[in-house]
Length: 136
Image (cartoon, rainbow, N blue to C red; front, side, top):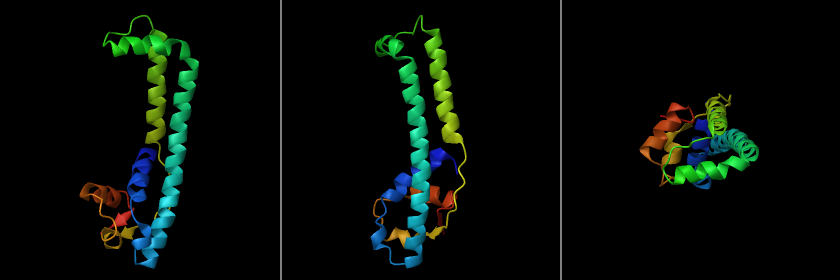
């Protein structure tokens, strides 16, 4: 699973009311899976935040000037090093979020969750099935 996917899965699973799940095995598996996925998502978020923090720290002097150009919808002129560093930082974030994380997931039957999660959408269920978090 990509780290970016783990972040989405963690958000979806966070909305499930686990205490309402009657199947003890499904409840236990979902809790274990959620904690592992959340840990991966948190690490991804922290890595992304660190890249952003470092970029903002390194380029603090130019950020305001570039922001001013952008707010006025004008081309950014005279800040080529900044723009290259920004592209590199964005690329590093994409690479980080695209990296794979190995998780030991125990798929949970859709039926165990569908009765207790009023807000889950069909697309979210399909996404969870595609990633092996849920099974038909």
